[in-house]
Image 1: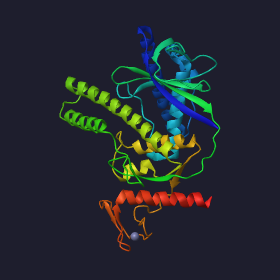
Image 2: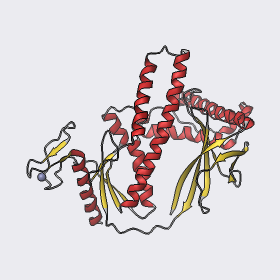
Image 3: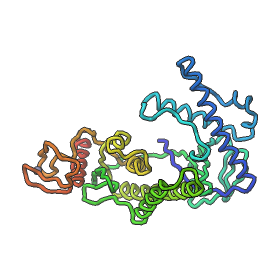
Image 4: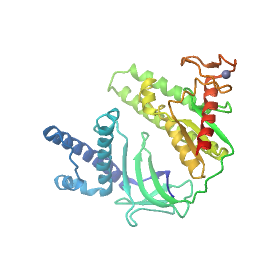
Length: 366
Ligand SMILES: [Zn+2]
């Protein structure tokens, strides 16, 4: 079975390479926006979608030829994907223009023959040649590199995400130990053993700081010097938080995947949920979605299972001791109190136990 895995390393381009990187970020953004313009115009005139390729634009704008051509191809693919998502599900929103200041500076390039190589602390990239890299972890020899995404963080540093593919033989693991996880607002989850997957303190502290800095921004005059500075500060903080969060989600999912043979979770639609809870599009939203996807592949590669329980299963209203179903349980009620057997339990803990039971049923039925 084919598996994919990404690795992120810090990049240290020299002066010439930095100029070229800046150019590549600029060209991919330019092409993306130009294509978006043309697609919109074409759609307004004909009501049809048009597929565009970089070749035409390279003739019209020769400076595009100076950068990695795969970066341009991927910009086009990203745009097509944004359109496909939009046509499939309007909640994705119409594809937006990339802004020079707001959008993340990044581009993706693909391995073709030996155009990209990782060797002795250097990463060879098309047009750039060998760029210094800090490779803090080894990559198994049988892994095959597929693509690289180079990006610049808000604080000016660079990083490369390397995507590898590899084959693994998976032996299904007999399920002996099983756990249920219930999504809980505020912490990541409550499990059926009663433990919570809470974020570490340092993470919480940063979160508070971010909120504070964001409040300060609202009192500043828009586009003033201080405002721009503050924006930058927030961006740096934001990236630091998202790195830490990722790291934490990896650790947490690894721990669970190693300790249990099967994990039952609710089959939540994260997008729907963030809408109904009015969470907005901030960075905390997709933590649980990310966590589940990490968990899914970490279980899978050990022959273990992530069981997604139908979201119409009323996990929070069922008594985990006697099976009695409460008529209703308002969201603000944090304690489950069974009207039939008198069982009292933390609401999320009770729901997690139910998910675990439901997961067992699914396993027994197959
Ligand atoms: Zn009961």
